[in-house]
Length: 598
Image (cartoon, helix red, strand yellow):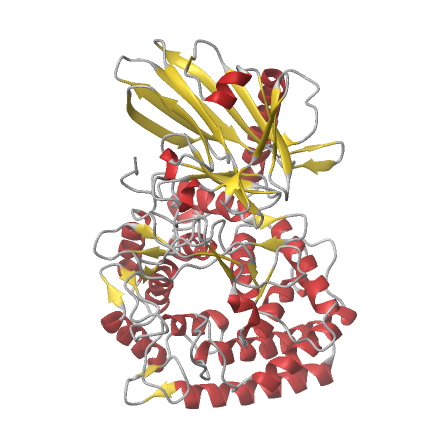
């Protein structure tokens, strides 16, 4: 049976692995051995979701009546409560262990599921049915004395339990009259009782997340919303390499039957910059430091500084795109894609995104390893490439597949890179370099303002000499290219408000692309519009819009990539880091200060 809101999902993880849990406590998405691996639990990409016969780990309560779900306060631990028609119930606690031990972070490839009775005699059928080869077949199963071994070809893992092994393998209903524990992890022996191990891991994980949240510099207003957004962004960081995922899923369509199904389980350099920027605003710098390590490895291994817009989580290897025939797709809407063709695209904004991300190393005194002249010299190579490509056609920020233009956003990002290089050089006392990069940035700015501005439209347009509007123009003051109170930017905001808004939502653009006209609003664009309204002096209107946008989140406080303006249903990959960044950015901009509020 399909849930009314199929993206009413909770996310758990530990920055090594992640999982999506639906409103009935079913594990419907988990990739192993890392978030871009084989979706061993792939029910999310079937018409039945939690009721799928394969790719699911569910606790089906007989005579189910209702459910409720919540995160444990300020953590990535989720609890789902199920009730039957007779007053019986169970509570399912899901988490991925994460805490510091022996001087290092413990974040294994592990998901712990704890089930306890709440009353009555709840009868539960356990369905543990992982898949292999992207849903093409069932995983190989071999029962043990207190565990079940699974092998997919790509990864071997086991589920260790204090429950009946035959109930796990045969799906036999059991009465839950005492707590049960299931530890899904590496194919290694668990040397202590699952219940005791899991209770200890749960307490340590709860403490770690709540301590991390306590260290955040959050705004006075919308604290709960910002905290949930920050935790979600943290969960989308793959700490082994420092990469930041755009989302944890693949192939959830942008709108019904649109064919716009993409794999977002990789690191877009542009998206990652906005993620680390948002976390930095809250004082969470470690994700940025890890991401800068990821960037450093990419740039250092690329002799000609010819950068891709998107990389695998390891930072190396070829990222090709293919269609998986075995999985029918989200609600049956395919195709399901693995990999992303964007890796082969030309997107010139990537060079500016690199420089913007690294710039903080030269100005933030909190960081252990600040930027130096050697790093600056490396960034200059990236900056020279940004100048070379500035003004050349590319696929743009929305990754158009069938056309190339000189996109305003791309050239603005090139300018931003040059501008930051001038500031860094001045900070380092390198006067000649500072003068050179300032001169280059000023020349680029004059060209961009002249060629991207349309007198006809009274707005900055999507492309040089074009007439189409694009929501990315709302970011021009954020990048520093133009003052927000400049009449040309104010006019751009007003034009975008007239043509791209749909209620409180905003489209990226209205014109047809490779797949026709878009039918869903792009979630983060609405937050960009809110920030732009505040920047041009319409702060009360911005606050009202922001409050309404927060109501668009699912029951767990999360957002996907797109929203249907007519139905309000969430669409697109989930959770979308861009969207969660929008919550943080707007809250920081719009909130009253602590001094004002107290």
